[in-house]
Each structure stands twice: as structure tokens, then as C-alpha cells.
Amino acid sequence: MNDLSRQATRLEAIGGRYDPWLLGAAVALASLGVVMVASSSIELEASPFYYLTRHLLFLGVGMGLAFWAMRTELKNIEQHNQWLLLACFGLLLVVFIPGVGSTVNGARRWINLGVSRFQTVEAVKVLYIIWLASYLVRFRDEVNATWQAMLKPVFVVGLLVGLLLMQPDFGSSMLLLSVTTCMLVLGGAQIKRIILPILLLLPALVALVILEPYRMRRVTSFMDPWADQLGSGYQLSNALMAIGRGEWFGVGLGGSVQKLNYLPESHTDFIFSVIAEELGFVGVCGVVALYALLVGRAFWLGMRCIEMKRHFSGYIAFGIGLWIAMQSFVSIGVNLGILPTKGLTLPLISSGGSSVLMTCVAMGVLLRVSYETDRAERLRSKLAPGAQGATAPEAAEAAPAPATAPARPVPPTASEIAAAAQALRGTSRMQPRVEPTFGRIA
Image (cartoon, rainbow, N blue to C red; front, side, top):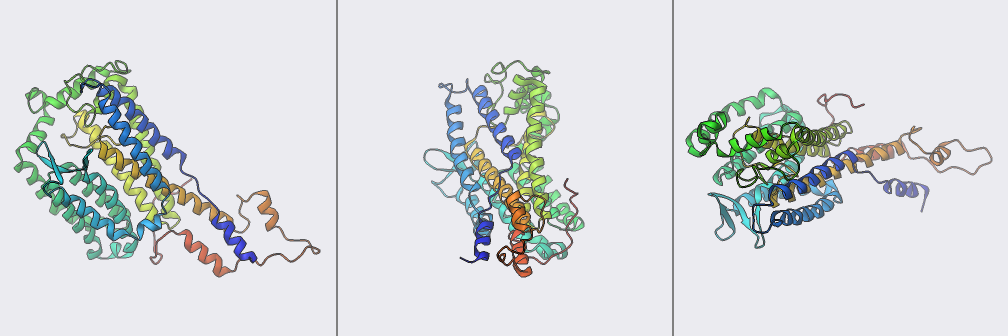
């Protein structure tokens, strides 16, 4: 083995590190979720630990899927981007197959897996974000310059939203539309071009709310839940009473009264109200701070990737961060009465098998992004001449040899260093262009 081969082997052996802040925030939220699911569901079934056992089972499977995602190279995922898009449409269509799809409370959103039901839109959220990230990499310059490239993902998300509205699932539809709009802006699309499709969609969305009586009742009840406290405002009024009882420090873990068959879906959609009642304003601030840390770290990671020209990784980090931020904001907003009721869970905290599984997968992908970014930075420091981060043995190797010493190995040529630098840029194959200004990272 020659010297260059040994050097290449040393570079390939360089590993990365998973972001500890990202991992810590995810673990803290998941741990809080276990505690609060146990507290909020203890009176809902004959067996007091039914929902806790179920939640722990799905969380364990989700952690296994997250570990698998953390060990999967992102370039291998990007190679199958078209299959990911086909999977999105397939998952949303399979719920309409008789005998496979399952209907709950008039909504056909689940498929029956025998041991449990799976809500397919939760998987679509992850797969669609990865596909959109790959699209923005492949057509990065075109998205910034042409209408056609910008409207293609709009057309795709429009078809997905159409399938979701047939189920119906208005909350997830709005979530996908919002994530798509924000990712297009981050991908370089001009805001003035995005405004036109939004203006064209607004009348249709308003019509969907007005023409569906149950959606209209949700809008009117959230504006004044006390007008029909035992009817359309029942959920929100009980949620607000739970939040009000919590005051500053809460009534104590397990001491909630509203969860005792007064507050519907206390372990899923309205678990935040139970947190507010039992842990108070201080506990609520802690939950919001954890989500802020998780989302902020994802955005920071995305900016690092963009600066390193690792666009696919960066767009994935932005997409997952936007998804978690928007869904947690909507879930908390519904509990506080500032948004109409939507069927969106609180990520990593609420009980719900499909949501828990796919949020864990998203966290695994996000941690993989942090690992590959850190690995690329370490590799760059190894290749940089006179790097300050070099260790003492490496500095000794880089020092000039004395006259009596044997000949040193031939250093890599400029073309070899350029090739390695190109590899550091991830999977982006686009021509260089002026990047959007995300701010300087300290």
C-alpha cells in the first residue's frame, strides 16, 4: 500500500459526532411524554397502564427506527428520491382500499396492520420533506430563476393535499402547504412568485372551511367557547379550565382533575392542557424551551450545512425543524384557544403510535445530518494545511523533516485536494451560485 492509499484510509476512518444538544432535547421531550401519558391516561381504561404500555411499545420501536436512520448514509437516501415521492402517493391512496383502510370517527386516515392502526400521513411528512430537499438540490438554480421549477413542488403538494382532504385531514394539509412554502423560500425561490399561488389557494381554503359545517363550528367555537360550553366549545372550555387551574407551579404531578373524563383526548391532542394543570406556568415554559432548543438547533445545523455547500443535508434539517415547529405551535395554540381545533399531536410527547414512530425517524435523520456535517468538518480540518485543530502527532507529521531524515511521502496534489473538497459538499451537483444570507455563525 503506497503513502497516498494509507492517507486515504486514514481520512475514511474519520468519524463524526451526533449533536448532543439535539439528542438531549429529543430525549428530554420523549421522557416527559412518557411521564405525562402515564399521568393523563391512568383513568381512561380498565387497565390503568394500558396507554402507557402502548406508548412505551411504540416509543421502543421508534427508537429502533431512529437508530437505523442514524446509521444510514444520506447519499443513499437521496438516490431513491423518486421512490420516496411515489411512496407518499401510495400511502395516501392505500387508505381508500376496502379491507385495508380503517375509518375512525368518520375519517379514513388509517391502515389496519392487525396489531394496530397506522396513520399514513405521519410517514408522508418525513418522506415528502426528504423528497423536497432532494428536489431543491437538483433544481436549485432553476427554482430561483423559472416559474416551472418552482411550481412543480407546488403541484405535487397540491395533489397530496387533495388526497388528504378526501380523508379528510385539514390540519395535515395546512402543515404540508406551510412547510413547502417555507422550504421553497429557503431554497432560493423568489417571494413575489410564491405569493401568487398562495393568493390563488386562499379562496379555496376559506371555502373548504365555510362549506363544511363541522369546520365552521370549530372556528366559531374557538372564538367564544363559553357560548356553547357543553356543545361545540366543550373541548376548549375544559382545556382552558385545566390551564387556569395550573397557575404558576401546577397542582402537582398526577393531580389533574380535568383529565378525569372531563377533558377529551387528554393523552393525545390536549395533553398540553394536562401539563399546564399539573406543572403550571413553569412547566409550560420548560416544554416550550425544549421545543425552542430542538428547532433552533435544527435551523442552526441547516445553516452550517448550507455554508459548507451540503445543500441536501441543510434542506432536510430546515424541513424537519419547520415541521416540528409548526406542529408544536399548532398543538399548543389549540390548547390555549388561539387556534381552531386540529387533530395534530404534540411531537414526542402525545400518545399516538404513528406520530411517535415517525417523529423518532425524523429525529434519527436529523441526528444523521449532524453526524455527517461534523464528519465533514473534521475531514476538512485534516485536509487544510496548517490547521489549528491538528493534534501534536499530526503537527509533527506536517513539520519539515531534517536533512538526514528519509524522504517524506509526496503530499496530495491540488487536484486531489479539490476532489476531496468537492466530496465535502455532500450530494449537491449544482453549479455554484450566490447563496441566500442566513447570518454568520459564531
